[in-house]
Structures are given as C-alpha cells and as structure tokens.
Length: 370
Image (cartoon, rainbow, N blue to C red):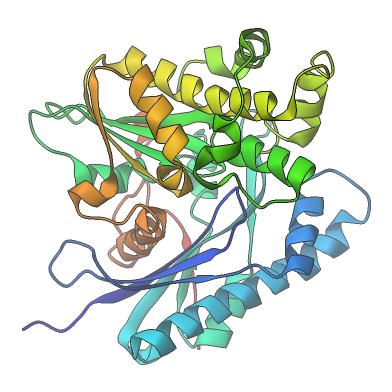
C-alpha cells in the first residue's frame, strides 16, 4: 500500500461562518478526504473582519493586526485537525490556504483582490510549508481571480456525455458548467448565496442563519421587490464575472428595502431567498435547459432553498455532491488542498475561459516553515 500524500486545505468564505480545515490524501491521484475540522471564528475577530470589509479610517493598522490574527486562527484549525486525525506535521507536504477575502474588486481600472491570514504565521505555528495567495496571479493576467474551483471540479466531477453543473452556495453563489463533451468548462459567480438571507435574519432576529429556510418559508415573496432586486446590473453581465460583499451587502439591501418598509419581515426573507434561487436558476437555464446539478456549500443544507431551486430547474436532476462522493461541506476545502498540490507539482490551476485570464498559470506562492 502506498504512503499517503497528505495536503491540507484551508477555507474561510464570504459567510465567515468558520474556518474549514481538511486533510486530503492524493496518493491515488484522486483526492481522498482523510479528516475534516471546522474552527469557529471568535466573536471579536468576526466583528473586526466585518468592519474591515467596509471602507473606514485606520484601515492599515487594523488590516495588519487582523491579518496576523486570522493567520493564528488558521494555524489553530490546522493543529486541531492534525491532533484529531493523529497525523504529525512532518507527514503533510503543504497547506493550501485561501485566506479571508476582505476586498474583491477585479473590475476597477487597476483591479485587485485581497485575502488576509498571514501565511508566514500559519507556517511558523504549524511547522508546515504554506501555499497561499492563489488569486492575484490570475488578476495580474487580466482575469477575475475567481472562481478558482472550476478546474478542480473539472478534474473530480466531470463525466463524459453528461451535462453537469456544480453549484457552490456560500455567502456568494458560483457555478461550474461541465458540458461533458468538450473541454470548454465555464464558471462564474451568479450573485448572492447565503449572505443576504443571513444578514437579514441576524439583523431582525439575532440568529446566525435561517435554519432550513424555515423563516423564509413562513413568508410570501413579494414579486415587486424581487423584480427590483433582480434588476441589479450584475445579473445582466456576461461572464467571466465575479462578485462579493462589495456589491451585495447590508447597505445595498437597506437601500433596496427603503420603499418596501410596509412588508412583513418574513416576506422580505422569503423574497431574499428567491433572489438567490432565481439568480442561480436564470444563469443555469441559459447554459443548458437540462442536465445534472450538484450543490455544495452551506446552501446545500437549506431545505427550502433546495426545494425552490428544484422548481426553477425542472430540466435538472438536483442533488448535493454527496451523491457523487464528496460531502458538500468540504468541497471547497478539498479544492484548496488540490491547489496546493498543483503548485507543488508546478501545474497550472486556473481556467482562462472561466476567469478571463490571458493564459493558464501556476497559482500561489510558497511560505516556508523553515
């Protein structure tokens, strides 16, 4: 039996609902999840990150402090993972760290993206080399720097003669289209995933999220509000495209709701859930009216969201990625372990047709533990 070829993937997404750490074995050529762990983000750090995502004063000092703090949190997640898995740091080839995005603005005249979580700190605290800063090479090549996971989806989930969509619903939703009969893989952010429905229930009920979409299900969507929300220019943009909190945030939502203060709160929540579902379905149906769609990310656990999506995608078989062998909670974490492995082997990891970059490239940089 071959020796394990261990990599660790670290992921903290737009939702900021925890740091996912996964231990992945690539010795068979196929990524096999060996162990997984989620580290909660402490309340004080979460508030600091949320403030940092909004323009304000004293940003550079706060950025520096929080960058180190996130690095320490990511390292804690790795060390907890290894303890629980019974694996020593010396057995791990490298850590692939996505970092925490605090700005993603690729469409400016000088586009940029910024993820924090100091990889030097992670390397020192874990004793393992870290591969990080995956997005900025793609930006330098004229791309969006996102989404990066379609190349991974293509390798792991593509099936010949089958049209498949891999739908990740985190804070922002993104899709990978795997046509099955060509290498022309497509992928882009469709718009809000969980971020607006989470933000609204946090504001009104002080709950972290709407479990199973139960609160949304107690309301009735308002067609006029939904039409207004869907009129955002982002939804009519052609891909390649990517987005984040910079466009779809609580300030934008409050502006949109200013003329709808007469609505019951549960009706607003239902409409926000429909915004996520309709924006996803509109894009998927444009790519192909039929096929298979597999959902991962936190949205895969929202029963109301999955039910509404199935009604809007009648030509699709809808399931979670569990059906094709990967727990939906860990897909993105595994993808960043895969990106670290690609870097170690000096293999390209972006898809220019997805991001708009001028060419394929090896992504990331290495931060040594030595």
